[in-house]
Length: 122
Image: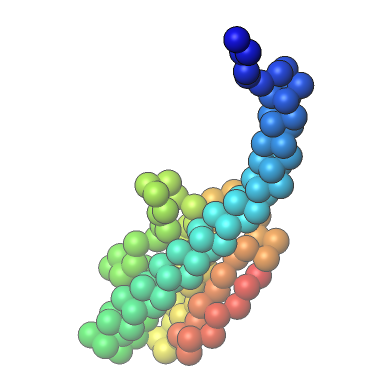
């Protein structure tokens, strides 16, 4: 009777292949997650812009929207805050809001939105 199974070398080759595939896939997955958080921050900025426009339609000014809590100023994803949303400027006819990563390093990750709908990446 012949006993069949895997040798230690065969198992080590399989583990090595799995390790190589994981090493390639992990950075790609992390980039995907970062892009998803960034997309959520953009969506939250647009929701905040709508809230500011509703505030403007009541008072015909953006001044005071920060004290009236027109926007929720965090961008949670999966329960964890990933971006902080701040009012950069609020004037009578204009506003600028910014989404900054929690670690506060912009390096192309900060997003600004103005009253005319212009979105810029800082």
